[in-house]
Length: 123
Image (cartoon, rainbow, N blue to C red):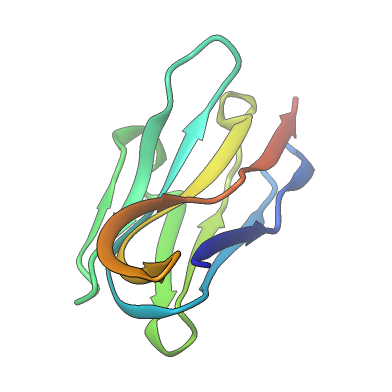
């Protein structure tokens, strides 16, 4: 079945860097936009960055100039480079993909989420 698997989270000091990866696997026929969201304790999930199949990017104001999203279409993988991390960046980061895939014998376009990866920034 189609699934998204994230990696790269962890604990880092303020000012440090991390790189998150998210690979889509399964029977995939095409991927449109991919993105990263985050959810801090007691807060709603919010968009961090998004990238279209053509490479157009969009960022939350709070991460502009510090985070960079990229993708490798051949590997069905999206990345998020996190630089100059701040304690307020602490959250669970979720990968998201708008793709056409086969699940349980049915081919359709759907929105998929990864399981989440924890990023903790200490002050």
